[in-house]
Amino acid sequence: MTIENDIRLYYTDVGEGKALVFIHPPGMGSNVFAQQQALTANFRVVTYDMRGNGKSSASNKPITISLLTEDLHQLLRSLQIERAIICSYSSGGSVAQAFALRYPEQTEAIVLIGGFPEVRTLWLYFEFLLGIFTAKIGAISLLAKVLGTAHGKSQDEKRAIERYARLANQKDLFSMYKTMLHDRNTEHLAKLTVPLLTIYGNRDYYLHAYETIFKTYVPHARAIYIDKARHQIPTRHADELNAILTSYFLP
Image (cartoon, rainbow, N blue to C red; front, side, top):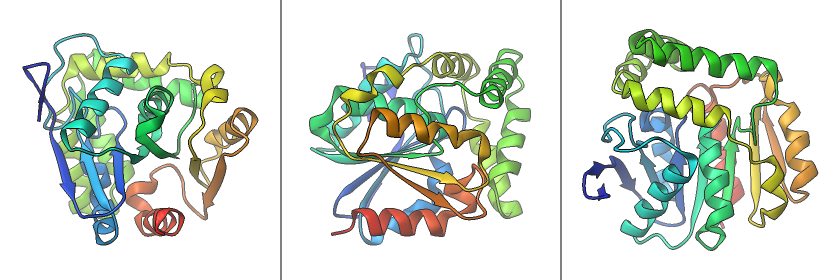
């Protein structure tokens, strides 16, 4: 689809039923959710590449969370999806939270897979700095290699993730990392009225503290931990993730 006359957003839309819309983190693109296509047996599954990532166009303006939120809004309108379950992975959660706060009437629930309301822990901060530095010097191939190695279970999967990550636009990737590093949703969480489900790897220790923040500001939030999992849940623990989403949202 095309927005703003010249920005092309690449997406896939498969299946019927409740809409699950997946949001990727910077650089990875929609193929990080390749194994969530199995959910099309019970859901309408939508994945897309945010501007500047994957097969979508480079941005024609600086990346902001507000801009990415509006892109998602336009995508749902184009697909005639009135309400969706917004599922995000890692820092893609910045867009999911902003969307739910701005468009609660279009949000049936939000799912944050390894998500956080803002960067507070030192380890996460350094991860963002590494992404910013890598994008700044144009080492997209190196970053793609790291992402592929970390997420893929097989050599074919590692290569597929790496190839897709190489498509990211350097300028937009740099801008996206910086924007998400400084994004602050904690103070707005109390306004979140839609159901919130957080999913963490049991061994993703440096993100566990964020569950406390979510529960403090969103008392109705529910957290699920996947045994023996680290951060790369959509790829390395796809069966568990798909089972959670099915049991939680299937009538």
